[in-house]
Length: 283
Image 1 (cartoon, helix red, strand yellow):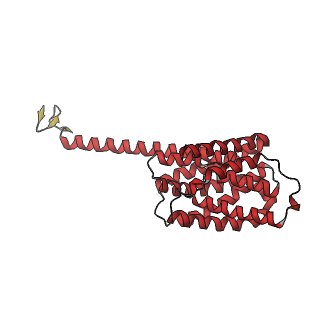
Image 2 (image 1 turned 45 degrees about the horizontal axis):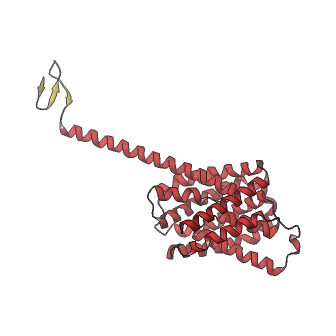
Image 3 (image 1 turned 90 degrees about the vertical axis):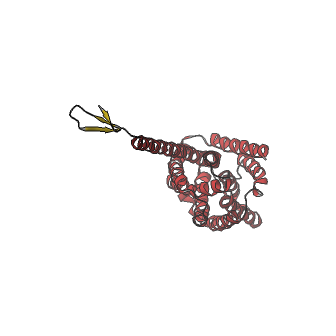
């Protein structure tokens, strides 16, 4: 029988409280389950986007083409998305640098020469990003990207050691500018670095990729220190994205070793050109 909003069994013992408090509790529990499912779905989406970006960065030299739009899709504003993306890229640099060590370790001398310029550039870029908007810098990005894509397709000179000091100094300045750009905005900085290294030292594309992984990890790493105190990092978003970056960065160099250099070169150049055209149209 039913009495006072309760259901009673044959012996008169209370078996279920049929009232609105219980219904409200059930709805609240269902809401918690729905929220948990949404969090898991968003985390899975970010891990996949980070993995795709890690592969793209280590194969084609472009990471943000996947990760930055993913952050905008889940609702971050452009500045927070840029800084969260840049911070998460530190794990991409770590994973790709570890995986590509066989290629870059014989070129430690070149890394030691260029590392300070990428470090200083990363610091300058991070400071600029925190205090300014990247909108103005975006104006020249498509043209830098097109120039880099063309430079990658040009044959490397075999007379690398005979380069003049003026030309070497110019390349060094460009290294600092790319490092600053990496800390400031970063889109397609990988392709620019690959082009610079191939023209500067006459490296093969797998080796240029490997050195790029280390140099950009320096710029991103030092920029990340500044971003820690900026208040723009969304931690619950950054963590799954960084996990995807790490494993994508670990996988990419293994693919680069197994694919013909010409194919990789065309992929990098085509990706850079496509992104440059997209940025020009979007502008």
